[in-house]
Length: 231
Image (cartoon, rainbow, N blue to C red; front, side, top):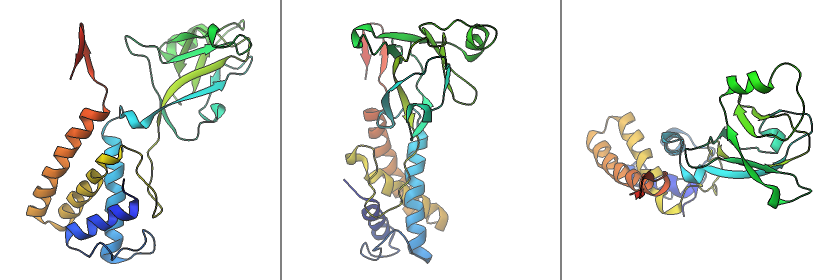
């Protein structure tokens, strides 16, 4: 496991720009040290943005709907790190709900529908509140239930977290720790490209590529075909 400060130290040492002990803090730097810190965080942003299906960036929530309310923001569910709702796949429905008075024995999955279909069914005209069986995402990212709830159902679902920004010395990237060096390698690639150091760029690009492939194998959903999983 590597902290932000430790990763910056690795980048400083491997780039030849400074010793690993030259950076004592990720704030208050100037010149080459400031560039090292900036490129290290840029590399982390690049990795997080490379795929929207990274497993470590997917998490769950459990919160209550409101009687008579169809549309919810992430804040409505007390979610502070929301980026996207995770939609259904052919073999799995992402969201479910149940009457808390009855407990999880009452829980069942609800089905994702296109927003236009949801709006035609539940977003206009006179509506009768009842148990929701569908959900949709509005153009502004609202989570929309249909039908409009007649009870304060408990909603369970999954969402993609927003990017983590490294800001303090002890901040630790939230991807699996065995891949933390990928951040340093990619930061070195960015630095070498900036400084037009062709050989350093090529060497670190190869290291970053190999570790990225390993991360993708580990953290992207496995391809599935009839009869089993394709590695």
